[in-house]
Length: 183
Image (cartoon, rainbow, N blue to C red; front, side, top):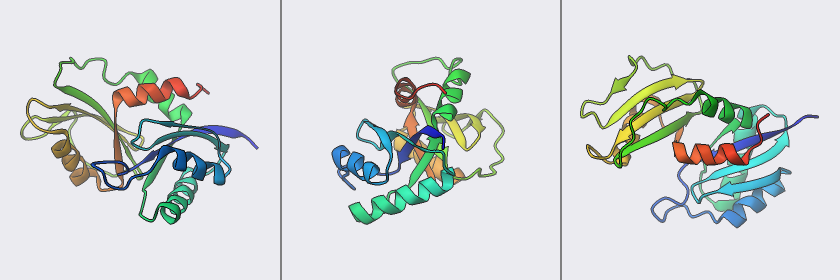
């Protein structure tokens, strides 16, 4: 059986003092599921782990269900393989974006391929959010904090793509890419 590296992105933990999940407990619960080489990154629910090659949807359900039983609240889980993360990094989707102190680059992971008909690049009415790409259950966006808050941009993403979404800063994705081996 082939062992692969996966990244679990948990939605809504350790945000604003709600749904607190200590990383030591999270690692222990992943160990109970027989995952290996577990690394947590930041406190926002990014877990790199090795597991026997599995169906991603089944793995998401199994982890989410286990964590909900242990922590006592739902913990939506979206999983990507190390290969998917490296492919995303290799494509360098934000290379044309001019960075300033107010510009933030985000990657949103979707559980399902939602069919949204937006002409890309798409700008929100107030120009605070720009979606530059949608591919393989992944939305690439740029937020301009000089126009609006990140939370409002995330609410817009949820309106278009639904609640089965979790978003990470591009810097976090780059850090994850350094942790997981390139397949």
